[in-house]
Image (cartoon, rainbow, N blue to C red; front, side, top):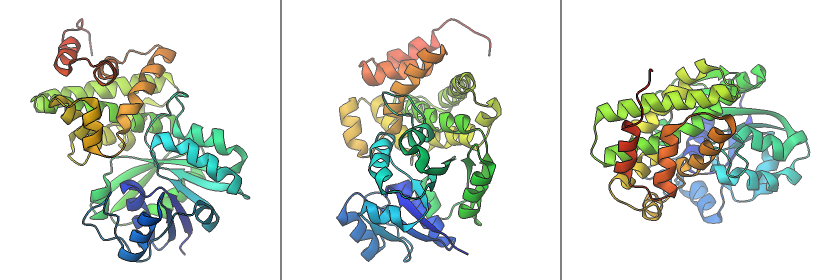
Length: 332
Protein backbone atom coordinates (compact mmCIF):
# COMPACT_ATOMS: atom_id res chain seq x y z
CA UNK A 1 0.00 0.00 0.00
CA UNK A 2 1.30 3.42 -0.97
CA UNK A 3 2.35 6.13 1.45
CA UNK A 4 2.06 9.88 1.37
CA UNK A 5 5.36 11.71 0.80
CA UNK A 6 6.14 15.42 0.59
CA UNK A 7 9.12 16.40 -1.56
CA UNK A 8 10.64 19.75 -0.56
CA UNK A 9 12.33 21.10 -3.66
CA UNK A 10 11.37 20.86 -7.32
CA UNK A 11 14.72 20.98 -9.06
CA UNK A 12 15.81 18.19 -11.39
CA UNK A 13 16.69 15.65 -8.68
CA UNK A 14 13.69 16.43 -6.49
CA UNK A 15 11.39 16.04 -9.47
CA UNK A 16 13.03 12.76 -10.51
CA UNK A 17 12.77 11.27 -7.02
CA UNK A 18 9.16 12.41 -6.78
CA UNK A 19 8.48 10.67 -10.09
CA UNK A 20 10.00 7.40 -8.83
CA UNK A 21 7.80 7.56 -5.75
CA UNK A 22 4.67 8.17 -7.83
CA UNK A 23 5.56 5.29 -10.12
CA UNK A 24 5.91 3.09 -7.02
CA UNK A 25 2.31 3.83 -6.06
CA UNK A 26 2.88 6.55 -3.47
CA UNK A 27 0.90 9.77 -3.18
CA UNK A 28 3.36 12.60 -3.67
CA UNK A 29 3.11 16.37 -3.26
CA UNK A 30 6.14 18.38 -4.39
CA UNK A 31 6.81 21.85 -3.02
CA UNK A 32 7.95 24.53 -5.46
CA UNK A 33 9.24 28.00 -4.68
CA UNK A 34 6.98 29.66 -7.28
CA UNK A 35 3.31 29.48 -8.21
CA UNK A 36 4.36 29.37 -11.86
CA UNK A 37 6.42 26.20 -11.44
CA UNK A 38 3.67 24.50 -9.41
CA UNK A 39 1.09 25.39 -12.07
CA UNK A 40 3.35 24.02 -14.81
CA UNK A 41 3.75 20.68 -13.03
CA UNK A 42 0.04 20.42 -12.22
CA UNK A 43 -1.32 21.50 -15.59
CA UNK A 44 1.31 20.48 -18.13
CA UNK A 45 3.16 17.61 -16.37
CA UNK A 46 6.46 19.31 -17.19
CA UNK A 47 9.29 21.07 -15.37
CA UNK A 48 11.07 22.54 -18.36
CA UNK A 49 13.70 24.60 -16.56
CA UNK A 50 15.16 21.58 -14.79
CA UNK A 51 14.08 18.61 -16.93
CA UNK A 52 13.49 19.88 -20.48
CA UNK A 53 11.59 17.69 -22.92
CA UNK A 54 10.44 15.39 -20.14
CA UNK A 55 6.88 14.38 -19.27
CA UNK A 56 6.15 13.92 -15.57
CA UNK A 57 3.69 11.40 -14.08
CA UNK A 58 0.09 12.57 -14.20
CA UNK A 59 -0.42 11.73 -10.54
CA UNK A 60 2.41 13.99 -9.37
CA UNK A 61 0.95 17.14 -7.80
CA UNK A 62 2.70 20.35 -6.80
CA UNK A 63 2.15 23.31 -4.51
CA UNK A 64 3.94 26.54 -3.66
CA UNK A 65 2.24 26.63 -0.24
CA UNK A 66 4.78 25.37 2.29
CA UNK A 67 2.22 24.84 5.04
CA UNK A 68 0.10 22.67 2.76
CA UNK A 69 3.18 20.68 1.78
CA UNK A 70 4.25 20.05 5.39
CA UNK A 71 0.75 19.04 6.51
CA UNK A 72 0.32 16.68 3.55
CA UNK A 73 2.36 13.81 4.99
CA UNK A 74 4.48 12.56 7.86
CA UNK A 75 7.42 11.97 5.50
CA UNK A 76 9.45 14.93 4.21
CA UNK A 77 12.08 14.48 1.50
CA UNK A 78 14.42 17.49 1.34
CA UNK A 79 16.00 17.95 -2.10
CA UNK A 80 17.35 21.49 -1.91
CA UNK A 81 20.62 23.26 -2.60
CA UNK A 82 22.86 23.05 0.46
CA UNK A 83 22.65 26.77 1.18
CA UNK A 84 18.83 26.62 1.27
CA UNK A 85 18.39 23.67 3.64
CA UNK A 86 18.64 25.61 6.91
CA UNK A 87 16.40 28.51 5.87
CA UNK A 88 13.64 26.24 4.53
CA UNK A 89 13.89 23.95 7.58
CA UNK A 90 13.49 27.00 9.82
CA UNK A 91 10.32 27.92 7.93
CA UNK A 92 9.04 24.36 8.27
CA UNK A 93 9.78 23.92 11.98
CA UNK A 94 6.80 25.90 13.39
CA UNK A 95 4.49 24.05 10.98
CA UNK A 96 5.32 20.63 12.45
CA UNK A 97 3.06 19.38 15.24
CA UNK A 98 4.04 15.68 15.20
CA UNK A 99 7.67 14.62 14.55
CA UNK A 100 8.36 13.92 10.88
CA UNK A 101 10.26 11.13 9.17
CA UNK A 102 12.87 13.08 7.19
CA UNK A 103 14.92 12.02 4.17
CA UNK A 104 17.41 14.26 2.41
CA UNK A 105 19.10 13.97 -0.97
CA UNK A 106 21.27 17.09 -0.74
CA UNK A 107 25.01 16.77 -1.39
CA UNK A 108 27.07 19.43 0.31
CA UNK A 109 28.53 20.99 3.44
CA UNK A 110 26.87 24.04 4.96
CA UNK A 111 28.85 27.24 4.56
CA UNK A 112 30.15 28.87 7.75
CA UNK A 113 29.16 25.98 10.06
CA UNK A 114 30.83 23.17 8.01
CA UNK A 115 27.99 20.88 9.11
CA UNK A 116 26.83 17.89 7.09
CA UNK A 117 23.21 18.07 5.90
CA UNK A 118 21.83 15.61 8.46
CA UNK A 119 23.53 17.72 11.14
CA UNK A 120 21.91 20.88 9.79
CA UNK A 121 18.47 19.25 9.85
CA UNK A 122 19.02 17.92 13.37
CA UNK A 123 20.25 21.33 14.50
CA UNK A 124 17.16 23.13 13.19
CA UNK A 125 14.38 20.58 13.64
CA UNK A 126 15.68 18.79 16.76
CA UNK A 127 12.66 17.23 18.55
CA UNK A 128 10.56 17.63 15.39
CA UNK A 129 12.41 14.68 13.84
CA UNK A 130 11.37 11.04 14.05
CA UNK A 131 14.44 10.00 12.01
CA UNK A 132 16.82 11.34 9.36
CA UNK A 133 18.02 9.32 6.37
CA UNK A 134 20.55 10.45 3.75
CA UNK A 135 19.85 9.30 0.18
CA UNK A 136 22.93 9.39 -2.02
CA UNK A 137 24.77 7.70 -4.86
CA UNK A 138 25.63 7.83 -8.57
CA UNK A 139 22.48 9.21 -10.10
CA UNK A 140 21.59 11.76 -12.76
CA UNK A 141 17.99 12.95 -12.79
CA UNK A 142 17.81 12.81 -16.58
CA UNK A 143 18.68 9.12 -16.63
CA UNK A 144 16.32 8.24 -13.78
CA UNK A 145 13.50 9.88 -15.74
CA UNK A 146 14.42 7.57 -18.65
CA UNK A 147 14.27 4.63 -16.21
CA UNK A 148 17.94 3.84 -16.71
CA UNK A 149 19.28 1.38 -14.14
CA UNK A 150 20.33 3.31 -11.02
CA UNK A 151 21.65 2.17 -7.63
CA UNK A 152 21.97 4.43 -4.60
CA UNK A 153 22.35 4.26 -0.81
CA UNK A 154 20.01 5.09 2.07
CA UNK A 155 22.11 5.89 5.15
CA UNK A 156 20.96 6.29 8.74
CA UNK A 157 22.09 5.44 12.26
CA UNK A 158 18.68 3.77 12.50
CA UNK A 159 18.70 0.63 10.31
CA UNK A 160 14.90 0.39 10.34
CA UNK A 161 14.64 3.98 9.04
CA UNK A 162 17.08 3.22 6.23
CA UNK A 163 15.11 0.08 5.32
CA UNK A 164 11.91 2.13 5.20
CA UNK A 165 13.48 4.45 2.62
CA UNK A 166 14.73 1.43 0.72
CA UNK A 167 11.18 0.07 0.49
CA UNK A 168 9.79 3.45 -0.61
CA UNK A 169 12.08 3.76 -3.62
CA UNK A 170 13.01 0.24 -4.76
CA UNK A 171 11.72 -0.89 -8.15
CA UNK A 172 12.93 -2.65 -11.30
CA UNK A 173 15.30 0.14 -12.35
CA UNK A 174 15.94 1.99 -9.07
CA UNK A 175 17.84 -0.11 -6.53
CA UNK A 176 18.54 1.10 -2.99
CA UNK A 177 21.10 -0.31 -0.56
CA UNK A 178 21.18 0.52 3.16
CA UNK A 179 24.14 1.82 5.14
CA UNK A 180 24.67 2.95 8.72
CA UNK A 181 27.72 5.13 8.00
CA UNK A 182 26.03 8.52 7.64
CA UNK A 183 29.31 10.44 7.95
CA UNK A 184 30.95 8.50 5.13
CA UNK A 185 27.94 8.73 2.83
CA UNK A 186 27.52 12.47 3.34
CA UNK A 187 31.21 13.33 3.08
CA UNK A 188 31.55 11.26 -0.09
CA UNK A 189 28.49 12.96 -1.56
CA UNK A 190 29.74 16.44 -0.78
CA UNK A 191 33.40 16.24 -1.70
CA UNK A 192 32.98 14.38 -4.97
CA UNK A 193 31.53 17.60 -6.38
CA UNK A 194 34.86 19.35 -5.78
CA UNK A 195 36.78 16.63 -7.59
CA UNK A 196 34.25 16.82 -10.44
CA UNK A 197 35.06 20.49 -10.93
CA UNK A 198 38.72 19.52 -11.12
CA UNK A 199 37.89 16.82 -13.67
CA UNK A 200 36.06 19.38 -15.75
CA UNK A 201 38.97 21.81 -15.55
CA UNK A 202 41.54 19.33 -16.83
CA UNK A 203 39.12 18.33 -19.61
CA UNK A 204 38.63 21.98 -20.53
CA UNK A 205 42.40 22.41 -20.65
CA UNK A 206 42.62 19.59 -23.16
CA UNK A 207 43.89 16.71 -21.03
CA UNK A 208 42.53 13.21 -21.58
CA UNK A 209 41.61 9.99 -19.83
CA UNK A 210 44.97 9.50 -18.11
CA UNK A 211 44.68 12.82 -16.32
CA UNK A 212 41.02 12.27 -15.35
CA UNK A 213 41.75 8.77 -14.02
CA UNK A 214 44.61 10.13 -11.92
CA UNK A 215 42.48 12.97 -10.57
CA UNK A 216 39.55 10.68 -9.69
CA UNK A 217 41.82 8.17 -7.95
CA UNK A 218 43.75 10.74 -5.95
CA UNK A 219 40.52 12.63 -5.27
CA UNK A 220 39.07 9.48 -3.75
CA UNK A 221 42.15 9.21 -1.55
CA UNK A 222 41.59 12.77 -0.31
CA UNK A 223 37.90 12.18 0.40
CA UNK A 224 38.71 8.97 2.27
CA UNK A 225 41.43 10.61 4.37
CA UNK A 226 39.10 13.35 5.54
CA UNK A 227 36.11 11.07 6.02
CA UNK A 228 38.03 8.56 8.13
CA UNK A 229 39.46 11.35 10.30
CA UNK A 230 35.87 12.52 10.88
CA UNK A 231 34.80 9.03 11.95
CA UNK A 232 33.67 7.36 8.72
CA UNK A 233 34.21 3.73 7.75
CA UNK A 234 36.86 3.65 4.97
CA UNK A 235 34.92 0.90 3.18
CA UNK A 236 32.05 3.32 2.56
CA UNK A 237 34.21 5.19 0.05
CA UNK A 238 34.57 2.10 -2.12
CA UNK A 239 30.78 1.91 -2.40
CA UNK A 240 28.03 3.68 -4.31
CA UNK A 241 28.15 6.93 -2.35
CA UNK A 242 31.95 7.01 -2.65
CA UNK A 243 33.70 5.85 -5.79
CA UNK A 244 30.37 5.29 -7.59
CA UNK A 245 29.17 8.85 -7.20
CA UNK A 246 32.68 10.20 -7.79
CA UNK A 247 33.06 8.45 -11.15
CA UNK A 248 29.66 9.45 -12.53
CA UNK A 249 30.05 13.07 -11.46
CA UNK A 250 33.59 13.38 -12.79
CA UNK A 251 32.89 11.83 -16.18
CA UNK A 252 29.37 12.76 -17.25
CA UNK A 253 28.14 15.70 -19.34
CA UNK A 254 25.01 15.65 -17.15
CA UNK A 255 27.13 16.80 -14.19
CA UNK A 256 26.87 20.55 -13.62
CA UNK A 257 30.03 20.42 -11.47
CA UNK A 258 31.95 18.83 -14.33
CA UNK A 259 30.49 21.40 -16.72
CA UNK A 260 31.46 24.22 -14.38
CA UNK A 261 35.05 23.01 -14.27
CA UNK A 262 35.17 22.53 -18.02
CA UNK A 263 34.15 26.16 -18.53
CA UNK A 264 36.87 27.31 -16.13
CA UNK A 265 39.40 25.23 -18.05
CA UNK A 266 38.23 26.85 -21.27
CA UNK A 267 38.95 30.30 -19.88
CA UNK A 268 35.66 31.41 -18.31
CA UNK A 269 35.84 33.54 -15.19
CA UNK A 270 34.08 32.17 -12.12
CA UNK A 271 31.29 34.72 -12.51
CA UNK A 272 30.80 33.86 -16.20
CA UNK A 273 30.87 30.14 -15.38
CA UNK A 274 28.15 30.43 -12.74
CA UNK A 275 26.01 32.46 -15.10
CA UNK A 276 26.49 29.97 -17.94
CA UNK A 277 25.62 26.91 -15.82
CA UNK A 278 22.52 28.70 -14.55
CA UNK A 279 21.93 26.35 -11.61
CA UNK A 280 23.61 25.78 -8.25
CA UNK A 281 27.13 24.37 -8.55
CA UNK A 282 27.45 22.62 -5.19
CA UNK A 283 31.16 21.93 -5.53
CA UNK A 284 31.93 25.63 -5.84
CA UNK A 285 30.59 26.28 -2.35
CA UNK A 286 31.68 22.96 -0.83
CA UNK A 287 35.30 23.79 -1.70
CA UNK A 288 35.27 26.32 1.14
CA UNK A 289 33.90 23.84 3.67
CA UNK A 290 36.31 21.10 2.60
CA UNK A 291 39.32 23.34 3.13
CA UNK A 292 38.02 24.43 6.52
CA UNK A 293 37.48 20.79 7.53
CA UNK A 294 40.99 19.98 6.31
CA UNK A 295 42.33 22.63 8.68
CA UNK A 296 40.14 21.45 11.55
CA UNK A 297 41.10 17.78 11.21
CA UNK A 298 44.67 18.44 9.98
CA UNK A 299 44.22 16.44 6.79
CA UNK A 300 46.17 16.96 3.56
CA UNK A 301 43.81 17.76 0.65
CA UNK A 302 46.08 19.03 -2.15
CA UNK A 303 43.42 18.85 -4.89
CA UNK A 304 40.83 20.70 -2.81
CA UNK A 305 43.48 23.28 -1.88
CA UNK A 306 44.41 23.82 -5.52
CA UNK A 307 40.78 24.18 -6.57
CA UNK A 308 40.18 26.73 -3.82
CA UNK A 309 43.00 28.84 -5.25
CA UNK A 310 41.51 28.59 -8.75
CA UNK A 311 37.93 29.32 -7.72
CA UNK A 312 38.49 31.94 -5.03
CA UNK A 313 41.96 33.41 -5.54
CA UNK A 314 42.00 33.65 -9.35
CA UNK A 315 44.89 31.21 -9.68
CA UNK A 316 45.62 30.07 -13.22
CA UNK A 317 44.22 26.51 -13.66
CA UNK A 318 47.20 25.37 -15.72
CA UNK A 319 49.64 26.63 -13.10
CA UNK A 320 47.60 24.95 -10.34
CA UNK A 321 47.86 21.60 -12.13
CA UNK A 322 51.58 22.00 -12.68
CA UNK A 323 52.07 22.69 -8.98
CA UNK A 324 50.11 19.55 -8.11
CA UNK A 325 52.25 17.48 -10.45
CA UNK A 326 55.49 18.95 -9.16
CA UNK A 327 54.85 18.26 -5.48
CA UNK A 328 57.37 16.09 -3.69
CA UNK A 329 57.15 12.42 -4.65
CA UNK A 330 55.26 10.16 -2.25
CA UNK A 331 54.27 6.49 -1.93
CA UNK A 332 50.67 5.58 -2.72
